[in-house]
Length: 424
Ligand code: AMP
Ligand code: GLY
Image (tube, rainbow, N blue to C red):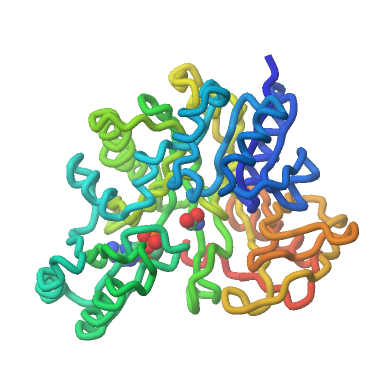
């Protein structure tokens, strides 16, 4: 039986998923809401925002969608799965993405920390602070060593983590966060022990009972080469990651992935979807920095290239509770994604720049992150514009391929990091 699939989202992650899904013989029609210029080449874009639940409902009914895959965390934390579950017309639609309860693993740092402590999953020492126990917060800071890590409890568009060297400054920031620096998201703040080590992103897909581990990746968050300058949504990614070898990944599975899925079961939190483990390797020992309830971006733009199995089988398995019947086969080769961004990003930047050279790309895939068709031209429509993804026998080869392709693409002011993988 062939099915109709709706992907919710509009970034490079959703374009990469659309590319992978499109290869499945099980797909009839593919829809993307709202999608971008890239996804329009693979399926039908539907002009509905990810936050417009009624609009998504209409799109699902009109187009006889059988399976919904949610890309970003926002609609999951806002209860899109719960909305589907409670609706007579939608309740039987297969859904990939957790309910609001499980989505709190990303939506509330305090929830995630309590979950990890409860299930003995390795994570940094912490204290949750509100205006009610501020003095306890100050006292806790004094017991910690510099630098101090302060995290807004709620979603803060990736900006809610502050790392501060000076104790007085940390105390002041704690006060400011509680006073509403990140709105309601920082009415609670998690103070955390600083961990040093190298980070990686591990992904699993689960139906709440079984799980399958996707290729491990590493993203590069800073705008500048050598990991300098401001944080961005991600300047590129590599997969696999040499330090995340078999020994490390066994620890990750035994100490983190399995206990997380079993923890969800013990806590009676139904969960169908992806779990993204943001990990740090502290001398070879994996520790959880954060959970996300979705795939990473730009990691997905590399990871999708390494999944050999039918991705749709995994999606169906996660949604209907039959993941145990699926297998995942992974390509041993390397894949990378190099992000082309607008000049000025992550500060202010211009949109609407005409992109040229896309028709010259032969050996890479170009996933659109922020693009829009304007009078038939593909134009930039965001800070992160295109992910240039390639495979190779090793990371170097894959990077060389992406960099050669990137040289062929042009839009006014564009920038990309030329040093991805420098730390590996
Ligand atoms: P998050 O929003 O939780 O992903 O945090 C953003 C970034 O802050 C992470 O990718 C880490 O680089 C850094 N970070 C978060 N928590 C810690 C910690 N406890 N120790 C060191 N770095 C951290
Ligand atoms: N690349 C990190 C994230 O998607 O949050």
